[in-house]
Image (cartoon, rainbow, N blue to C red; front, side, top):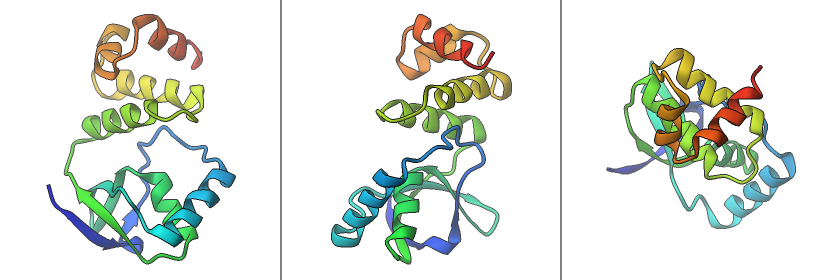
Amino acid sequence: MEIVMEKLDKIKSSSLNPRKIFDEIKLKELAASIKEKGVINPITVRTAGKGLEIICGERRFRACQMAGKTEIPVIINNLEDKQVLEFMVIENLQREDVHPLEEAEGYEQLMKKHGYKTVDDIAAKVGKSKAYVYGRLKLCD
């Protein structure tokens, strides 16, 4: 796996990302940190047309834009849509500030678009209990 620097204008957000809400204050704090210290962890992207699409690292990408950066370290990992969504859902679960409805919508996408048949399948994939995943999915009703 190789880390390379890529121009921000070559990278776009993913329409698959279930996370849509970003705390503006925390984003500004991250931008200030990036301005001073740079990006510590690269984002993960995949090729998309003539550019790159974010798999993991949307906040870091946005904070770099706010900080006036022109490049960001990336890891290019060419994955299929199902794998991308799995990465996104799992990474978002590791965050404390993900809105429960966004998490639920991620699970719902896995079931509707990517062949997950049961709550058991999702729970096993993301390391959560069946009851937890089922409870989240009920939010989509």
